[in-house]
Image 1: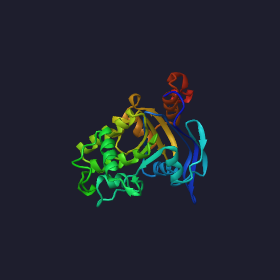
Image 2: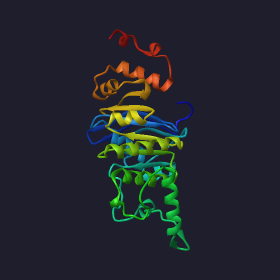
Image 3: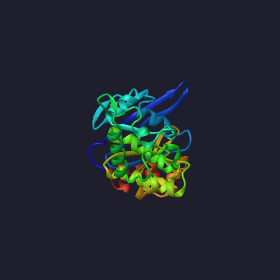
Image 4: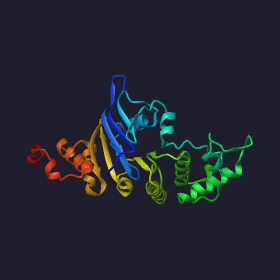
Length: 272
């Protein structure tokens, strides 16, 4: 990708007591691209998402938003910048209908009264723009399928007109058809010019929608890959640590700079 990233992380570190959760992590996200954040359990993915979303601010490092250094110390800061997060539990109210869930905490009013007609109109418009198909916007969320619930949660995140959307395991526990629907929805977010950070353990899903893949291992960067230029075996090797760091650095340079790999591989990597 060229130009200035919408979101840029440099030297991000986070400690919980004696545990160093993140160490000098870097990540760039551009408009109109999907970046998959992958790694084994305990790699630091959730911690990094909390740093970006303001739930758990970093101890060290810098965050730049559209080339300008910013501070994200609380969720409100992230929301004001244009960062929306959809967590794995979705945080939906099963007893409320789709419209009420979409506008929960941000209801539209007219003359001091909730404007149900305007909220329903906006809900239909938003879901239609994402090609989300549900029987009615007035049925309880509890009656929707897993894929439809995920779609509602993603649609709700777009009401604030974000520029970056963080998706935490959006296809977890979904069937094949529902997973395909959510992956199509992620592609539509990219088509609308949003930057998407996708956390997933499913490499098939990752390869289906991601433009780039960032691997975390033990709280550190362990490779950046262009999805169409890397094999699944290479990704797994980076996740498990079964790849030489010099080779990881080569892929990082190729992915970020587009340079000739033969010119960027250290001599020790060529000899290995």
